Length: 552
Image (tube, rainbow, N blue to C red):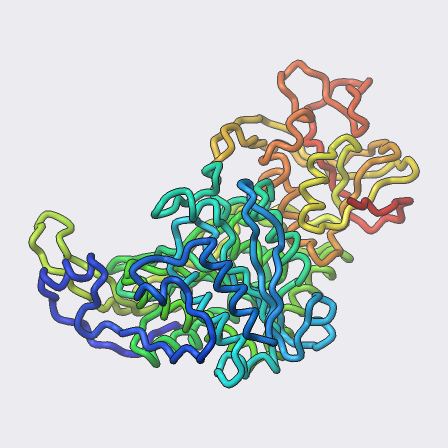
């Protein structure tokens, strides 16, 4: 289905003087101006508002603002969901009418639950300022935002990475260790993300969450993207493309702003962001949630903050107006996930690529502005018509979905990673002889993956069927569970975010061709040599097993 913005004629070349003003943060002719509502008497302003948006609201200034806001409002709860590596408290606030404190209270209301977040990259702060102002409107009776709380519950986590924010005046992308937190959604090794997922996402189980960043391409004020991996329910991304994103476009256009997909394009095609499950918006899809990325292209702080404010508000308005639709899509994705595991069906994608969507798109790009061979070339905004949108996820290689995955009883690190997400894991309480599908190991290599110097890649050889003796304590991970899509992705040895890749099962992999293969108990097998097997087995048919649940 074609996706378009409100029609706009291509603009004439802009004088180099005005381009210089843009670099300095001043708006160009025709660019939207921020239009804020008056701050109610007695209500706090953010530090950025107080300084005329010449500087961001620092971490402690944010806490002062949040405490002051709580002090004048009976419509919010304020708390912390954990601490960072450097010991900074991570704030969250809950807005609802009637006001709730715990997730189960929100669930009983039968309304969409939304999580709005920002600043997972420490230096990416623009939309955080708009989100802080939106929190004031959510807490203030009489505002358009507050009126929506009869139909939705909103949880706000305005700063995921304060350590990176405070690392320098301009902040840094990673946390205090330099780790990119938006690539930690599978490992959950860093406290800020582990706490966010464990105490906000997993606990509240939102139908939709938004993650605010700085990036993307001008002349847009906001770029967006939803899950783009093959395996999450396609209906989630279609809901974004066909309904949520047009609502955002309309909201921003009402004040003269522009929005379009992340990340950038040329006169032939528009390209989007990555598909890895470790990225927040894609992770949301694997949870059967609508995960939305917001990116703030280069613009003045005030204009960008207003664009972010409008984007977050548009999402709340959509959820409030289309509550049954949003809840229905998420519920059906969860039902489908469980059904695919209960009577194993479908495939798990282990390799994919992007292709052009089945429809042409039109968008705007910026050319000139001192780039290329002519440094004096003025900036020009070009309208591109009938171009390709390189966003369609296509499976290159797949594996059959099993009824359950079976892991050796010593694979405690892998199980701990699964349990951090809330994946259901069981343990054999009696020995079992099982016919399982297994992968032979054709090779093992290592590669650098952001903060990992030696992520482990397994090359799969043959797929064989074997009968193995599994002792008491062997782990069993059923795929018929709410997180079945995530569990399958993490337990297929060839995906980009599996438990082997992230070094939780290195000791189980062969290190030399002459080393005898290991059996499920961890001992070297006392039988005729066979190719070593990937230490994750697949039970393809529903099988009664004597198991107990693994608890943390």
